[in-house]
Length: 99
Image (cartoon, rainbow, N blue to C red; front, side, top):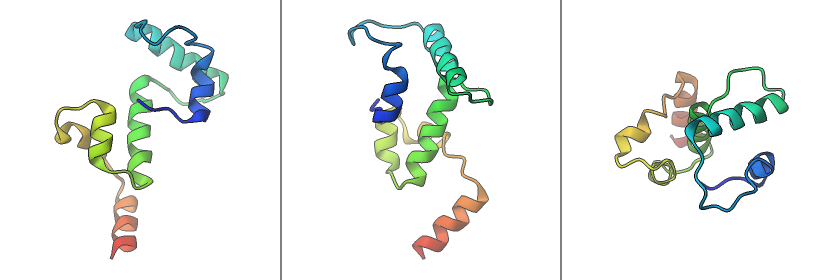
């Protein structure tokens, strides 16, 4: 998954190893929690929360659902759409800006 320069900078010193080394899910979870704590984020943060937040921001910024599907590694668009439970306010704004 592509990372912005800002996010890459937050995680860089945690993963200074070659790309081919695989990390366990638990290691990733601990790292995300550690980075969230260092950034003084008070709400619960997990890899799943990051995926969901990224998906919502992607759509809010006008990214396509097809590209999002590929980035999240989903075989079916219906799986990607689960991440996109949009608020009524966002849907109203979307309608008003498009029509």
